[in-house]
Every structure is written in structure tokens, then in C-alpha cells.
Amino acid sequence: MTVTARIREVAPPITAAPETESMALTVHDLVTEFRTRSGPLRAVDGVSFAVPRGGVLAVIGESGSGKSAMLRSIIGINPPSARIEGRVQLGHRDLLAMSPRERRRTRGREISMVFQDPLTALDPVYTVERQLTETIRKQDPGIGRGQAVARALELLELVQIPSAAARLKAYPSELSGGMRQRVVIAMAIAGRPSVILADEPTTALDVTVQARMMRLFREVQSEVGSGLVIVTHDLGVAAELADDVAVMYAGRLVEHGTADEVLTRPAHPYTEGLIEANVRPGQDRRPNAIPGAPPSLRRLPPGCAFAPRCRYAVADCWAGQPSAATVAGDHWSRCLLVPAAEREPS
Ligand code: SF4
Image (cartoon, rainbow, N blue to C red; front, side, top):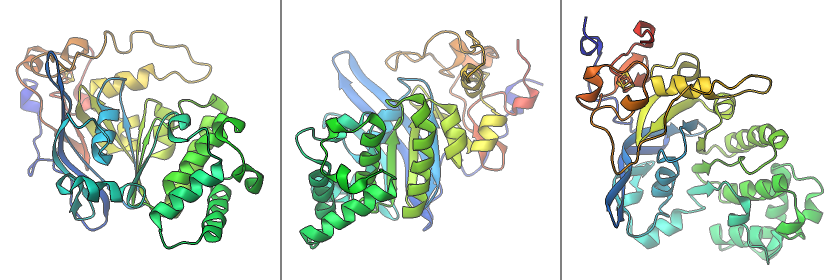
């Protein structure tokens, strides 16, 4: 049997994200293209997914796969020269169809973002109290100053900052990296947004603080009831935190399913490579888990973008981009060799 004969196509197309009332965020066929001197660069290419209220989606992949550009397109902070297409729905409202003013009003109240480096989100010249109360009053203009301070204190306690009252008076430079990131999380949840986006939120922190911080993030997010999309290169974080995992390569999602399915029964060779390359304390790295480097988004190979690095590649892989095929239930993969069980290393 040829590899193409093994494809199990699904109808309707499984790249169409479900659109239901229960979804906090629905992204449909999102495209982000940057104009560059050497021509257009498509950083995000037809990405679709949905995150329910209270749910967590982890997006994994190497640097340069388009993960951050995708988050920035969703919240609307890419440079104005970026061309963005598709639909980004908060409930039933399409963020991409809103005016810039309407869109700005959703930030913080309905959708917020936690960046990798807390220092980019905090202003070094203002105290934590000033920055938190400003955020709170922006979300809720009717609130009095005293109430805003009380709410800021509550938020610091929610993110488990010790001696919260004293920390309110501190400047960001007087806090540890972990505490600064807790303040940033407090700011992100201040407006009780229905969606939180997080771009490698613990990467800048000490390894011992990372796991604690991620657990806290999950606790706080589920208490607020937001849908969370977290971009991470750390598969341990994805396994611990996420309900679903999406794998991104060269601007496209190549695999999607529950965290358990994707991380224990990967159906795309790229996911398999990421898992093999994920070094855990006390383990030796497998240096050739994924040979080569991600392709330039300006010069993608024909067919499957992963083909030049794929140990299972066959001639058909170069013929055209593989469409998504169901592995089991909601688990799908864009690989001609689905299901994974049928693949053997060449
Ligand atoms: Fe699958 Fe072929 Fe792409 Fe490898 S090159 S991921 S076998 S479609």
C-alpha cells in the first residue's frame, strides 16, 4: 500500500475550528504576512483552533515557527504593516473586524497577554501599586482609588506574593524575577479577561521557580475562568498545564489533540523529534533527534515543509502539502503517514 493510500481524510475539514458558545477563543484560518525588502514573509499560515472557557491550549515548536507572531496577531500588536487575515472570535465577535479603537478596548478587559520578560510589561519608574491600580481603573473606570488599591492587594494575594501589602509599595527593580512575573500575571487577570495569551511566560525565570509559577498560573487562570493559550518550548510545561497541545512548524499547525494523546502518542515526526529532544534532568540529550534547522519562511520546500529533516520522508512528501488527517477522536496530524503506529524508521 502506498503512503497516500493510508491517509484518512476527514470531512468537514478538521482545520475548521468549532464555533460554539462555550469557546472563549476561536481562531479560524489565521494568516499573518509581513512585508519585507525581499518580499512577503508568511509567519502564520492558515492556523485554526479553539479554546474553551477555563481550558488551556499549549502551542509548542522551535523558535521561528510563528508561535509569537500568532499570539501577537490574535491580540493585535503586530506592526501595522503586517497583513492579517482570517477570523479571531471572542465568543461571537470577530476581533479582526473591529475598529482599532474597539480592539484596544478589548485588551485587558476581554483578552490579555503575559510576555516572556516581565520587565517589558512593567514600568521601572512606577511602584507596583501605581501600575496595578492604573490597570484596574482602566478596566473599571468607575472604581474609586481606595477600592482599586484594595483590589490590587487582593490580586497580589491571589498570585501568592508574600507580604503583599509591602510589595505594593515596591518598584519592579526591588522584586525578584519570579515576583515580577507574578505581578505581570496579576495585571493580566485584573480585568478578568475571557482569554489570556502567554508567550513563554516562565523562560526568563530560574528553573526551580518555573514549575511553581506554571502551577500558580493554571490555578489563577481556572479561578478567573479564562481560556489560556500558552506558547512554550518546554514540553514538561505543556504536559503539566495544558488540556490540548498544538504543534507549530513553519507557520502551520502540524498536529493537534489532547495533551496526553499528542505527547504520548505523537502522530507527526516533528512532534516525535521534539519529544525526543526534550531533555529532562539526569537524561542525556539525543543530539540528532531533529537534524537540521527550521526552514526559512521565505523559501519553504515544496510539499511538506518538514520533509528535508524528516527521517520518514518518501517521494510523495515532496509532492504537495499534506492535509490534516484524523489519528483518533479530535487528534489530527498533517503527515502522510498517519497513523503513527504504521510508521517505521527508514
Ligand atoms: Fe510526514 Fe512525509 Fe512530512 Fe515526514 S516528510 S512529516 S513523513 S508528510
